[in-house]
Image (tube, rainbow, N blue to C red; front, side, top):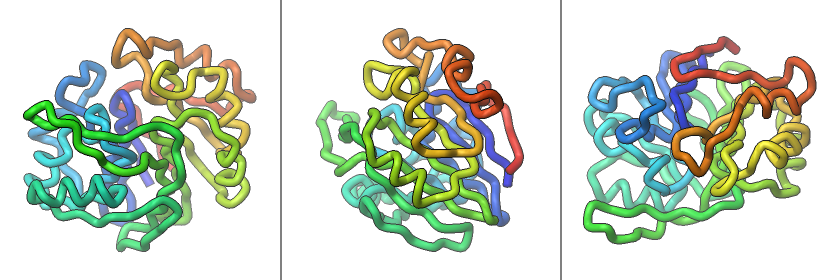
Length: 226
């Protein structure tokens, strides 16, 4: 399994002959190394409906005939735009040909602002557990710190966790360091920082708060193998 990071909260996973793209906020993301009109994927996973996570989903999904897996209300909205979707709700899971996707709770909010500046309700925000090829990846979405993160860690053997550290809209570094301990992942990568001035953070400082060898800073385009 190959896992790469592409700025903000974008993660790409290549596993079981499939490419999976999580939260593809590419256009308007100066930290992203991808191009929306060139990126190739089979599946898109979304944590919630905010524009900096849905991003280029519709364009990418239509061009690639990709399946979009998202919380129910968000999936329904994207389906109305002509995208093939699979809706899942919090606590639910589904086994696809590339692996199992389960949505966890995330303490945040979720809405989408469309081209007419209308705000669309997109259901509950989520974290994502992706289990494939004997490995488990946890993408926490835009959550704040909450105690059920302990349960997620106790119930799953997580190989790699992506945790937000930007503060203001999500956990900051201090809370994220607690979350890293609670989810018990073998490796933790910080996400959702430095894209905007209000979420400016030093990821290396965050990593320094963790146990030696636990944290890993990934720059846009960096890849690791699980």
